[in-house]
Amino acid sequence: MSEYKNPIIVPWDFSDKAEFALEHALNYSAISGKDIALVHIVAKSKEIEPALKKMDEKIEEIKQKFGRPVHAIVKEGNIFSTITDLIEETDASLAIMGTHGIKGMQKLTGSWALKVITGSKAPFIVVQAPPQEREVNDIVVPVDFKQENKEKLIWMHFIGVMFNCKFHLVYVDEQDKFAKKSIMSNIKVAVEYLESKGITYEINKLGSKGNLADKTIEFAQVIDASMIIIMTTKNIGTFDYVMGASEQKIIANEAKIPVMTINPREGKLMNFT
Image (tube, rainbow, N blue to C red):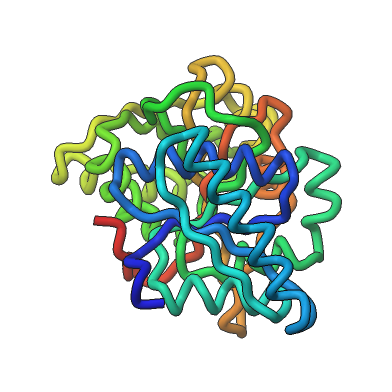
């Protein structure tokens, strides 16, 4: 895969949601200069040749429609392991995948798609609709009591430099003293880090009633956010990452705001610059 340098990976199944993911990828590619690779997985080797032919037709259609070159990768394997292997093999910048909101999240939960997201070493952007605009302006970042929040900062710096955007750190005023103390500690660390990097941000307390997922989605709608960034949590006692109900709810938000999901990697960034 040496011909692709840190590509943007788009899992491809010829669906309308994959088309939406492609349109988002084209925007990110225009900003970052990264190649786009559509990845189609087949179950048997005999399916590779006809799939390549179909993919070549699609690539030509994309070139005619958008005027940008896109690569096609067809691999025998299974979605879970093959996509994550390709992300690591190509040192992918990020992956962008389309889903179908609440209905799609029912398929995500406990399925290959959720495993792909939590198994990836590159951030996954999950989209439900085509992009509304080319720019990435306002990004909402929910802050809770988890330690993983601190690892999110290095990605925020990375994205902030790339897109020259504004971050909105949001939190709920928890009643539990331990949770509240941890949240405020995470916010303090975030402020110090973002200011040291010259990244534009603001902090928004979303009241003391209601859960953070709902409040985050509502706030993102109000400011017409370009994206929400969340993190998975390391499963205690394993090297796996898990996604709770709140994270799944944010991904499946009815406002159809793109959501970037990041797995903590102890600050190690993939090559996006």
